[in-house]
Length: 103
Image 1 (cartoon, one colour):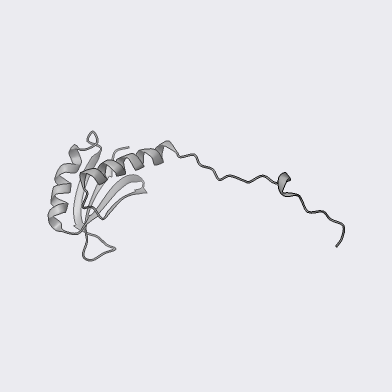
Image 2 (image 1 turned 90 degrees about the vertical axis):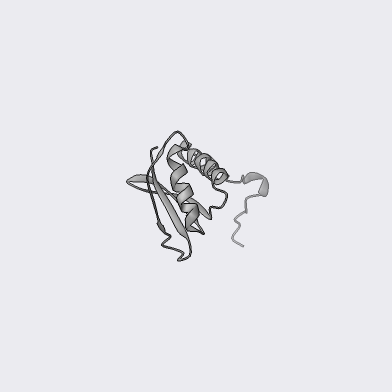
């Protein structure tokens, strides 16, 4: 040993991770919760941001996409627009509804 002393456990405090949640994250979680209640058959409810915020909902059957597309514009104060339906690119058997989110 070189005579160096190790710090005792009582002198070391734990570093806690940052636990703040931004207002944007909180709002997206709230919207996701509302959509999950409205569309319980949804397999995926997610948001993407690229210049604008977009919602994507993946479901198993095409009938659900038509129902979701019809209901989205009237939900959450009308924040969903430009609603589109199609195949989910990640899963060949899933169908997707996407919409622009005005937030």
